Length: 235
Image 1: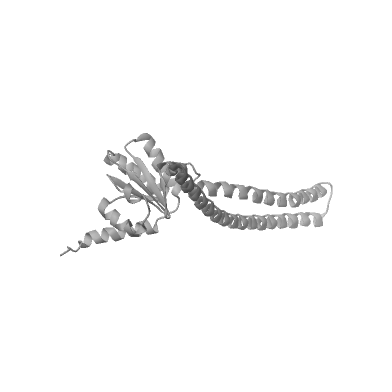
Image 2: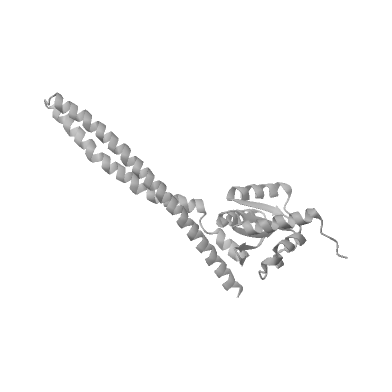
């Protein structure tokens, strides 16, 4: 008669399965020899990059991933294995692992799972060389911000020059009507600039949203390219 698995083991298997299913990427590493202080440092850097570093019993992890039927994945679950689950930015997490490994040779990057595609250590390192999502967004937002700022400045310039021209007329002996015109012109100039800046800000918000979608698409494409390159290397 087969013994029923204990409830706590079933719960762990379910947790690991859910983590694999919900993660944007999963990076598998060996942590043999890493002391407690270094491990805390690594966990913190991975959290900041958008990942979570977890350690489970290998037998339970194998049970959790058994249904995936991905060649080579189970082979990576051997020895002291720690798993980095990635929420969004796989490049940032790969970069954090690579940078830590440079100063601590006890950390060994085994490979990663991107969707249903398994990549080796070389693929993870290639992924680490990609710009992070935040870097790409910053670059794109800056590119969109500059033209909008110039647009607001250009709109402001002719109205301001007009107000200065009226002021010059007053200085040369203009009347009260001219003075009132200057006040009106300055008020309208201020309103026009406010409107221009508001519209520019809205345009930047829209551009940043579109840029975010473009970055997600580009990152996914880059990850696929990295996986293909890894496959080519293995072949």
